Structures are given as structure tokens and as C-alpha cells.
Length: 316
Image (cartoon, rainbow, N blue to C red; front, side, top):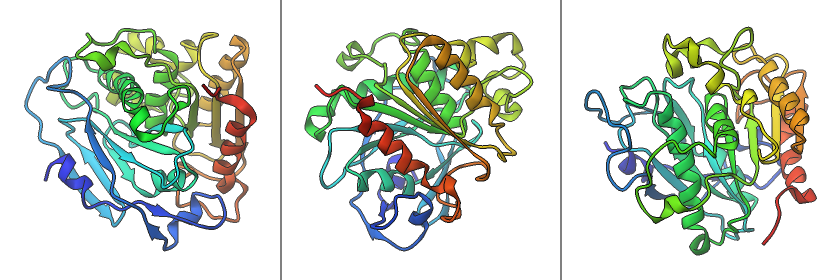
């Protein structure tokens, strides 16, 4: 089964109650199927050391696990009434795979936000450009979101990026390394800016350096090339041009230490970048649909929407 064929069997679930991702675990109304946009007009830049065939494991009715990603793409989830804001979404999996749930895009489309759900390349799967592969895909995804903005009812000044866990590293890289020309232009979309207008980072992998690195993600991203750790540590790439950021983490996260978000928040503060950090005592890793709705952490999406509504994103 191809990546694109798999998309046709997925359903976006919406929830009409409290603004929590945890609430999406309950039965809900199904939304329309996502459109599919191939990320690259031909083969992705850099090439492979050996052929790949995309592998998709259907873990549940709404979750597919992707690996051996040969053809990165965007699944476009369109709200019934778009409000002009869009998110390029990067779900996680430690750079080993992507555990991709349609419930997460479904929450945001229920709020009027268009979601470009990115299936990005995994750096340890034989791409000759190694750690540049997900960076290239992140930059290209934001450019394609801008290219398709008008027909989707999206304001080109309100396109953000959101990432979870290792996907948070993809998103944070997009927010901090957008001036790096990671690939040669392939079409007119590459004349557009790859800078997101804002970034939402949920339990993100940020640093590639000790002592707070998520070692499994670093191993997949850099292998044994630890001399590259600083170059891929997002807190070290923050400048005054980094877009506004919303960070959320749980202090009891046993997978990715909350210090990753703290490092990023401090770097943003030093650079004078508007940022908000929500650090919850409980919540574990993921901050997604499995959270107990009684936990304060389960309401972080509502806090994020309030943050956006305070004028963080400029309108045209």
C-alpha cells in the first residue's frame, strides 16, 4: 500500500465539547478525507543509498505508523469554516518512525484551522543528506502551504508549525533554521518564505547535547557524528528573527526531559522573541489524546488558542 493510498482510509475525528485533545479519544463525528500533496515533484533532494518502499502499520482506526518513507507528503485537513490560520504539523516517533494520528489534526480543524500534516523523511533510512532530510521536508512543507494558501482560505501571514516529540525537533528546526538553504530550488514554490509565522512545540526534542538530549532521537538523526550536535540543537539556533513560540511540556516526562523546553524558552527570552511556556507537573510524554481530561495539562490546546488570539499572529 502506498502512502497516498493509506490516506484514503483515514478519518478525522472532531469533538464538540471541551477544548482538550484528551476528549478526542471519545466517539465523534467524522470529517472529510484529507487531500494529499506530494512534497517534491520528483525524487526528494539528496538521493538514497538504497531503494525504499514506504511501510505503513495500521495501529488503530485513526493511527498509522509510517517508516521507510520514500515519498514524503502533506495530508491537508480542511475545516468546514476556515479562519485563515494554518498549521504544518509534525507528529513524532523518535526519528525511527512517525506515529500519525488523525485525531490531532481533527481537533484543530474543529477550531477552523487548516492542517498540513507532514509525513517527513527519517534521517536514518539511507538518505545521503542524513539529518538534512527532515529539515528539507519541513522547509518545503511551509513553502507549499503558502503556495496553496489562497485556494484553501489560508492567510499567508498566519501559517505556523506544530510538532510533537521528535516532530517537535522538525518544527523547532523549521522555526530556527529557515535561513539555511538546505536544498536547491525545484519549482516556483521555493521562491516563497520557509519561515513559519509562529511555532507550537509540544514535549519537543530540542537539544542534541548533554545532559538533556533524547539520546534515541540523536542516534537516529546524527548517528555517531556527535561533532554536529551543536548545529542541530535548536536552542543554539534561536535569533531575534525566530517566530513567536508556544511551548508545552510535563515535568514528569520520562522520555524527553522538560529541560528541552526550558532551554528553548530561555534562548527565546534572551533573543527577545515572544514566547510562552506551559510546564505542567503531570502529563507524561506525548501531551496528546491519551491524557486524563481531569489533568490541567489536557487543556493546553485551549491555552494555545488563547495565545494565538492575543495577536501573536499578524493579519494581512
